[in-house]
Length: 235
Image (cartoon, rainbow, N blue to C red; front, side, top):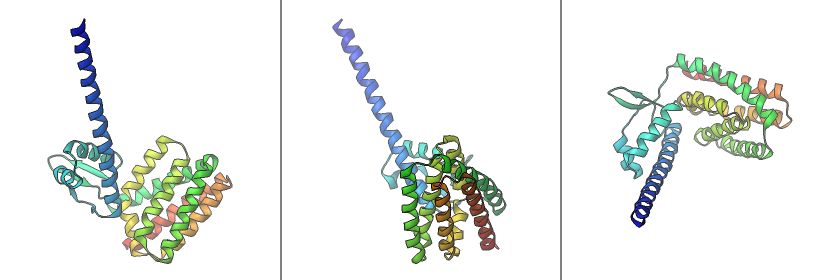
C-alpha cells in the first residue's frame, strides 16, 4: 500500500510540475506576444520583416517554445503570416487590400458605436475621456508617435464596451491589418491629429448619452474619412 501511495504521490508531483511548466510557458508566450505586437504596431519592427525565432528568444531571454506560440497567436490576429519554407514575416498588405479592409472596418465600427452606446460602463466612459485628454496633449505637440497608441487604445476601449467577444476578435484582426497605413497616415499629416480628436469627442458624447444611431453614424463616417485621408497620403 505504501509503495502504491508513494507511486501515486510521485505521479501527482510529476503532473503538478508539468502543469506549472505549461503555465509558465503559456505566460511567457503571452508576454512575448504582447511585446512583439507592441514593436510591430509602433513600427520598431517594419512591415515585411522576417521574424527569426532564435533571435527573438535571445533578445527577450526566453526559450524558442514561447516565441513559437506567440508567433502563432500573432498570425491569428493578422499581424504576421507564415510562408512555407521561408519563415514568419510581418504582414504587409497592398493599397488595394487596405482600401477594401477600410470598408469592412467602417461597417464594424458603426456596429461598435451602436452597441457601445447601449452597453458601455461608467468606467469605460471615464477611460475614453482620459484618452481624449492625452490625445489633446499630443495634438498640441503635433506628436503622431504619441498619438497613434492612444488612437488604438480609444477604439479598443469602445470595442470592449460592446461585450461581444466575436466582434472584438474580428475587429482587432481588421485593425491590425491596417496598422502600417494608419500609422503612415498620421505621421505624414500630423495636422489631422486635432481633427481626429474632435471626432473622438463627439463619439464619446453620443455614446455617453446612449444615442446608438448617432454613435453608429459618427464612427462609420470617422473611418470613411480616415480612408479618404489614407488615399490623399498615398497619392
